[in-house]
Length: 233
Image 1 (cartoon, rainbow, N blue to C red):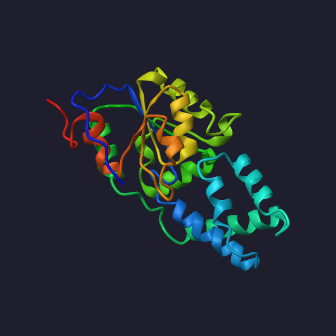
Image 2 (cartoon, rainbow, N blue to C red):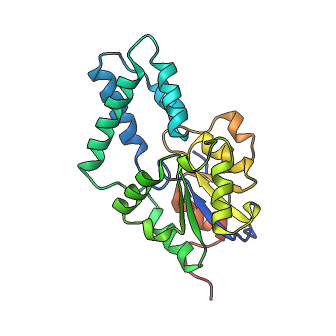
């Protein structure tokens, strides 16, 4: 994946808003693995196309995609419950893993005293538990979960709420995302958007939005702040 060239004069941001799963936390691989477990257990074959539709969406939208995708194969509630059981068991057996570059980036942003929030399609209580397990919850002023807005990603509501909660103008926010749905939400909110793709590379149509795509969170500091992490004097 090509990495964009850093700006000569990076813009100034008032806040940074993060997606969570697949960006901060390496949870989407666990979700994919446990989705496959549920498929095999219920003997319905592999259906990764259904899983990928769920990425970056709200709990309600994901359940709707499961209902549509499992039609004629298995009762969608049975599938959802099996997937959820395997997913929770996987998380209970190990700490939530961080994606590469998370700790240095959060440390750099904290050194600049930039307020940070999480805007995730995951429910707030679950998001809080994951961030606590990963040891990074203290970095965030606000955690906005999917149930806090009526319309989930790709609607901009969750990013707009995050900006309001932080008391900043959306246009002054940097949004960091991994999924297509999340990118569309943050762009629609009027934010500067950097995408660090996880399981799915951005489509040609998504790239037409004109946002920045980087290979890793390790690249964000240099690109967006002109710094490898040191605090300016």
